Image (cartoon, rainbow over all chains, first blue to last red; front, side, top):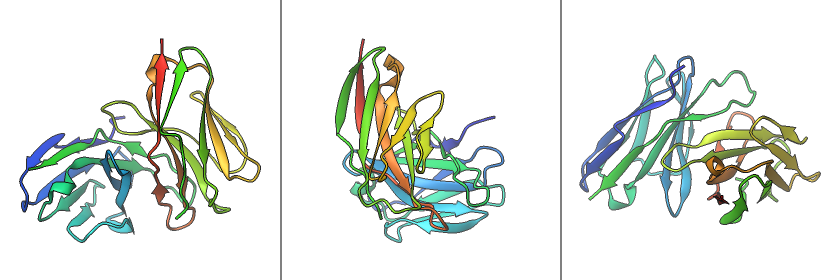
Length: 115
Length: 111
């Protein structure tokens, strides 16, 4: 089975621009979560999508948004980029069956640098 | 949200056991305890999880204190490939199910 894929792997943008990151989950996985990882803050939860609906949301400003498509692929968008948005953005998918715990499978991440 | 506390870094020798501690004194009765690790330049990967009882799998063992306020990840024989950042995470059960990540422990393994 192919793992979680994220595109692009690296991205350089300037302040004020917007960016869209893409995540393809493992086949059959319907839950996709997004995280921001920075050296000082560690992994911080952005949001989780399941069946095209946002189930959970972290404490990030409205500039951060996401969506999920019917094939479970997900995108996240950051508008009006700030220097502090420079980070590794990680996507994770899980099967999410019923209420039992489901292991999260992470992609390699997209490294975003804002200049 | 319940939080976890881990040492910033630890060091071990190859082929020796490693005990990675985690404190989670504000854990609630239905929070699961998870461990993930992140190797250099990779996304995190699942190691093990538990609720109340100790757990074993091919990668590691998880020892959970009776009061659940702390847990320990045990790597039985560390290898150089085990050098990574290890995260102890709580999962809110129920509809929320959010994983709450700490800063992790950076484990160095000496040959």
